Length: 83
Image 1 (cartoon, one colour):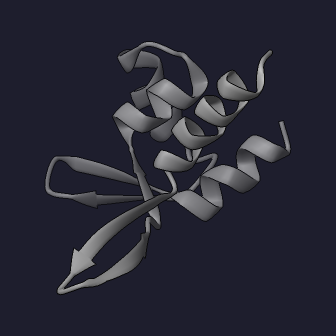
Image 2 (cartoon, rainbow, N blue to C red):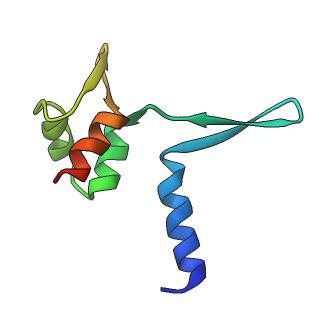
């Protein structure tokens, strides 16, 4: 893997965790505290039905807002690191 590929991979992984926004002339860091089901799918390379099944399994914390599911990032990361 070349240095360019390594940097690209690192940046794409970090995209899920941090986003920057401009406030006036100052750049502000926003740290995500949740994942979407789509992000879980992409992180684990699984299909949508398996991602929903995993989210509903109770192995990590989720938040339901109406029909929308958000996965607690810290809880998911702990679960993932212990697999």
